[in-house]
Length: 341
Image (cartoon, rainbow, N blue to C red; front, side, top):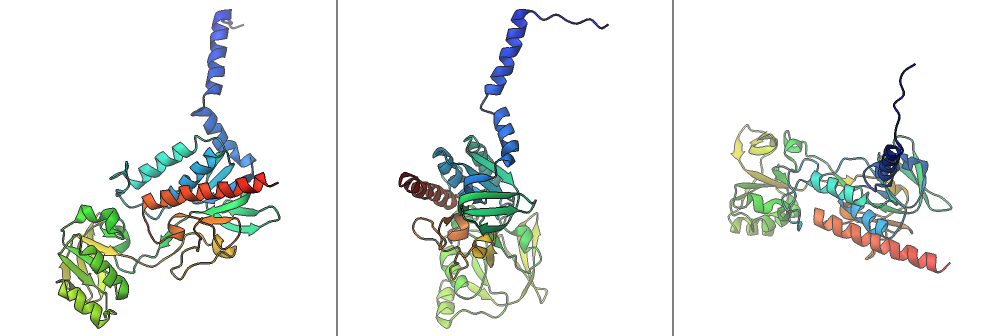
């Protein structure tokens, strides 16, 4: 028979105390268990579809208000290729993924907030609120919904465009213009959108060329004003963007000619990343954004929206701001409902 090592009373108390102290730790073990066992709970006060900046910000406000919140996120933010985020106090120059990861860790410290990495596939109204079904087959219920899934950009059918998107093909000068100031810059757009960008980008660089990728749709007045500021307009069709690891070097045209560049601005078409709001009856604006009022309430009662999905200002700082506001507005609404019962 193997020898059994005797443990003194003092050692037993010491080891037992250590075990109890581990169980009492707020992080990381208990949060890890809650995080993995949360699927036992299928009912929440609020489900947030989209767990990036806006969704996480809304969740923090609601978590601090002691609301039971579930965040469902597929892990595919529109800025996932962007190396640095700018124009955001305390985070200027930080990678977007780093900001989101830090935000997620901070939000999940609130024990009433849970996070599921999954795709919200469908939703329906119920007598008690709403149900959201995920791609993996899970079904969750909540009294209220927040949609913060953002937008999905439709990449132009130009070779190299998608590889450069968010790196050297940029959508916002406030986010990235300072880093490419005074550089040889192109605008890839047409019509009024091209005119708007030409006026805007001219503030950051005077070495500017507009590429309409085919016949110009600018009015004569717009054309004259653009040329008056020494901005050339090139109407050739574009076949590809020559680049190195996403950093654009040249625009290649269908006639095999080329144009050297260091940065390009473009605003391609977009659509809602999540179609559930429309399926539930939420109206969209003419721009394709979820229509909300001053309190981030959609046109369907008890459904809210924030971030890129409901506002044309596509910036991390603004997403955080609208998310926080949405959490506060929604909690105030729930407080009024609870207090009047």
